[in-house]
Amino acid sequence: MRHLLSTADLSRDDALRVLDVSEDMADVATRQVKKLPTLRGTTVVNLFYEDSTRTRISFEAAAKRLSADVINFAAKGSSVSKGESLKDTAQTLAAMGADGIVIRHPSSGAPRVLADSGWVEAGIVNAGDGTHEHPTQALLDAFTMRRRVHGAASRGRDLDGLEVMIVGDILHSRVARSNAWLLRTLGARVTVVAPPTLLPVDLSRLGVAVRYDLDDAIREVRPDVVMMLRIQQERMNEAFFPNAREYAGSWGLGAARFASLPPETIVMHPGPMNRGLEISDEAADSPRSTVRDQVANGVAVRMAVLYLTLAGDREDSL
Amino acid sequence: MSTRTVLSQADITRALTRIAHEILESNRGPDGLVVLGVPTRGVVLADRLGASLSSISGVPVPVGAVDVTMYRDDLRRNPTRASQPTSLPAGGIDGATVVLVDDVLYSGRTVRAALDALSSLGRPRAVRLAVLVDRGHRELPIRADFVGKNLPTSTAERIFVRLAEVDGDELVAIEGGAGDDGRPAAAPETGGAPS
Figure 1 (cartoon, rainbow over the protein chains, first blue to last red):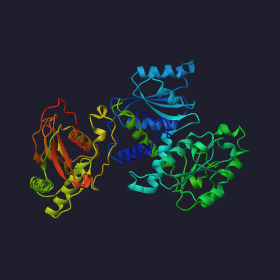
Figure 2: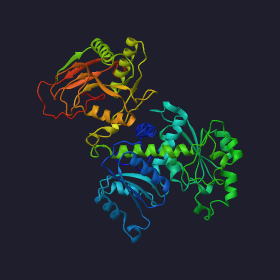
Figure 3: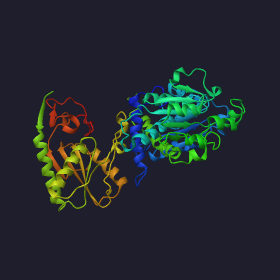
Figure 4: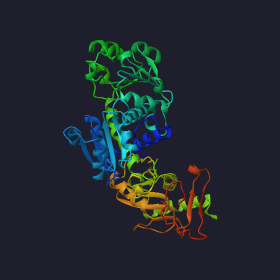
């Protein structure tokens, strides 16, 4: 794996390889010495054009556990605000010896440009691009589901037959997109539930079922996993739905709706949560919530991705 | 390329039984022993060695696996490989006498990596090394304490270890060697691939 740009072009074998290596990386966190020498002498740059404390810290922790040197580059207050282009920034970082670039960018496709343009030799990991993809989030979500379903016997298994329901702002969500592609590759069935205003015009490429009424969907699909997406505050002013109370009532996971879920259903959220809007305290704090597992698993999955993209002979890798 | 079998299934079984007796002799019994295999075939051998040690001594000897992938010094020279599970017995390895088990001892680099891996898993009282085949050509100051068979080889030759649990059939074979093909001895000494 030379880069990780998208889950759409990840084969089932590649995806399982990432998840299986993630199992071993997760074990490292249980040891006396929570560090591996694997990427010693390798420099990883976190190139973040958008604010994201969680994802950046998760990548930073992952790289440090693999003994890589980490440079954090936040575009705000940097040469980028003076008008430097992505190309120049990337080449500057490459000249400083970056072996891997973890990039978050508001423009969909920016990581792909960096990987395909030939500007830099470094391995590129997409940490979220525009409204396009967030592949490591999807991988950690799949890893979390697999561990909840298969437990210690997860290795080598996929998510065959799992019913996953993704609820909320599908239109702007790169998490939903990456998840839809990856989960399908792994054999899960995906249903998206959202107000029509928060669905993309063309859903055919996602290969998911579409529902508008969450209560009906829960009753009829009986999901194994409910993934609540964050409503971004800036969307509130753009008239995608009348107001927060109405959104919470119709598409939020309130206490009563949480109680109506099948007893084994797990509740996921990529964070940060808007409590009282898309998710209630009862759902978020229940033992069936995987919110904190997702954070812990995020480090393990990102370790696996950095290992698989950066550790080997980069001439030979695919 | 000629291939000749150097150990049959019966030879392998006999060698492991002898190693088990040697381990018990040098350790003065089974106390504090933990047997850890290096994936893939070392884990199979460790399981068998552990069973043998337990049945000879009458005391269960804990067995586990220690993956060395993340500790290798040749990661950058090869395409990335997937890691394998590391599993320690419930008691861990602190204060134990760990017997590392691998199929073929060659450059010694895998063992070096395994020693590094062990040091981040705990602090054993002592570490011993048991291998099915020692083919020579060490690149590091490492030697085995228990050897199934010493096989002097040229670097142009390749050693195949096939075990029933992994490969279906079981033998140790040596391939090539009629003429040195000039390839450097860069092959890692473990894994399903020939060594």
